Length: 67
Image 1 (tube, rainbow, N blue to C red):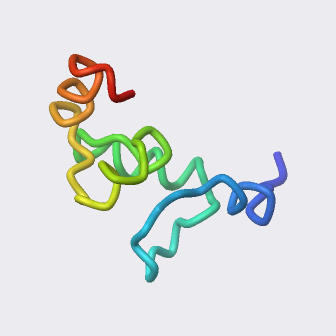
Image 2 (image 1 turned 90 degrees about the horizontal axis):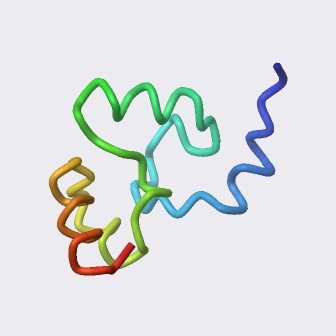
């Protein structure tokens, strides 16, 4: 499968500029899941900028209907 990095970057809301995985979704997801996290694209922009990408943070956002 060919990576569509340039196309993926159009919808990537990751605010961590030096990230080497930006636009390479398969690597990003794999990296974050190993740390019990979700990638930036699962979070609204304001929540993503906190860099708390934990499952628990995501669950709180769902509970408060922010996701």
